[in-house]
Image (cartoon, rainbow, N blue to C red; front, side):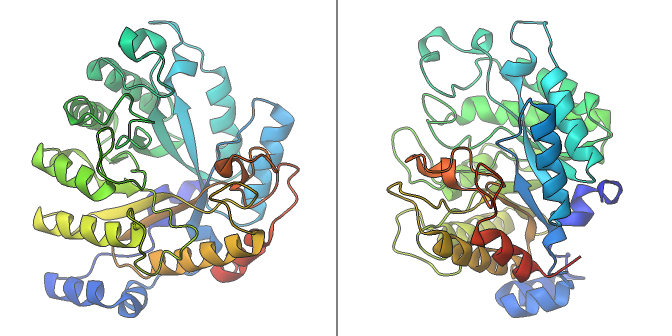
Length: 359
């Protein structure tokens, strides 16, 4: 599958022939799926690989299982602090092994260039879990180095992970830093190969407050700052649990509502032809306060996949996560896998495969 290319493999909707047809398709989810000729197979789905291990045996097992279950791609974090722990000092060994394992298993890779090493973080922000970089230029140079190193294996890049929150762009969302990061990374990656795709950083579902911007507000601010020409598609993380994604919910951060608002912003800004990639979507099963039962997890995933595929502007869909980080841990997100820590499948795995059909 790797030779097909991530875009052709994962895009679940095709552009309409003309503006009028596009309007008709967007207004009707059923019509969209039919008109686009979307292939309802699990091969059109990706999974995130947060639990990718440095252990060769575990890495081989995980990459092989993802491929054997029929998934087409993985979303892989390309950690700047791991690769360049000191200025100009590079250690690619761990990342090389992960990229090679997933690629050799026939999986396409969506690379996420993200996180900042201590030496490119303002000293006042070094106590933040995921601080923003202090110099957009240095980040964009790293993005260029990574894109060049993996240009034959990674053809689509996301610029940062969840840049709309203080938790992941600490101490608070900052468009004055992120927009130059995106612009410069886009230009430098395109200088390597114009056909490599560049996505905005996938947004986290949240509300506007002192440290965060909601996904819709963040995208509106990106356009207002002139960033529109510097991305090929928008990425977002439309989590909705415990509610189904297919319906607007009473949640203050309703992802269903956010998707519609972002799409409207794209159209207003002349970007009707661009897609939205859903680069994380899932639900945690376990005992945490925001977790659901394993059966409910399966229901929510199938509902979300069906809904996202019905959108004419849907790009890639990546399920978070393939494997639990730590099954039974009370932290919700450590139990979001399709399989448990020991690789035993949850009901969600079979439900996703059945919903997707067979390749």
